[in-house]
Length: 126
Image 1 (tube, one colour):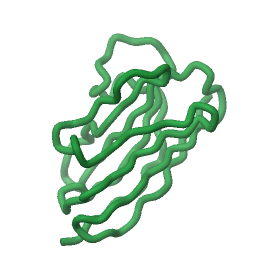
Image 2: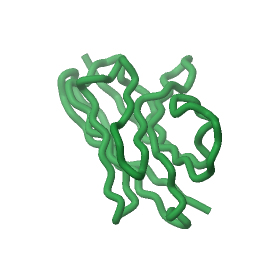
Image 3: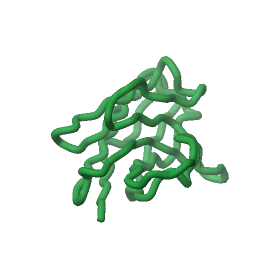
Image 4: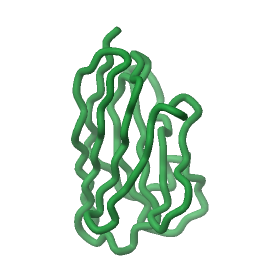
């Protein structure tokens, strides 16, 4: 019903910046929220940031607060993640997720999201 495509990943040095994009298509008129998760080798997929599509403040994991910034373009159905002052520990595959159905799961919970993108690799060298 909804397709999510991430882009913008790549290789950067520590202290550098990247901007990730997630373009949503299909029946996006029922969007409730969108977010980013990441998964490093040998680690669980962890919450990075999420935002309500109707507005309000975005939510960030403690590990990225002050460095990452969420934004969205409602008209383009696109979510952005501006990542500044990147650290080697930010290295992971970053996944875009969309919440298109009402549920009781917290925004940090993967189960809140019904659709996922294919992921984009972010590698930060020291």
